[in-house]
Length: 289
Image (cartoon, rainbow, N blue to C red):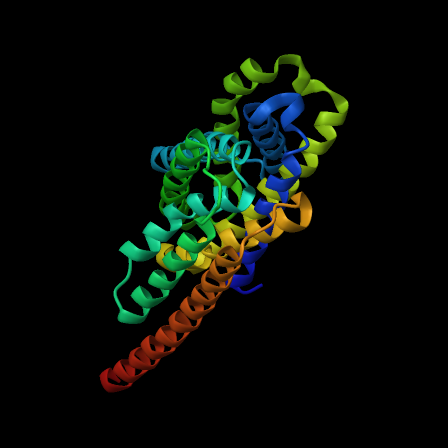
């Protein structure tokens, strides 16, 4: 599958799982959702990849850093989703990948697409009612962690050629989130109905998306990956509309279109740049020959 398709599949899984978790909030709360999601995902990934704890310290350190960022991101993001519409929470979370895309820019077209994506974010954030301040802070923190995870995840994907690094990172994230989940939900975490929904959420929004994204990070630069994830606010808003009946105003629909156009434009620009670089490399090799 092409790398952009992997990114899109990961976004669909993440946002679909986020919508599904709203069924779990009354039972176990946001921290309980995070604990169940990460714990079940860790079990699935460990069974699939069977990572070894014995390894070089640098790789283990990178996996621990990635897991820490995942744990904080999840706890902050699901607290935000419990207080904000899905589209608004995801839009604010996008600030992290957007910063990666903007800071890594080296060409004028990149700045154009980043500016268009920023315009879309602003339009998506427009609302006739005031947003919860705690939700805004949590979503912003989630965005910072997600931006950091893109950078650390890139290093992890380069050092570990399969899913063992991801399994270690998610397992560490699950251990970090466990005290918060137990404090908030206690024995309700073991309810059979809750576990059934949480299993679906873990597979849909953790196992598949993170596997897809780690593979995409092996093929893409963090800047391009960050720009491609600009589709996430649009997809989050659409899923919020379709599954949660969270309606958008006209400016927000304009933001959906702007963000989607920025993502497509960035992909096409990067593709043309790669072709030019490849042609230059071939020409240089021919001269050297």
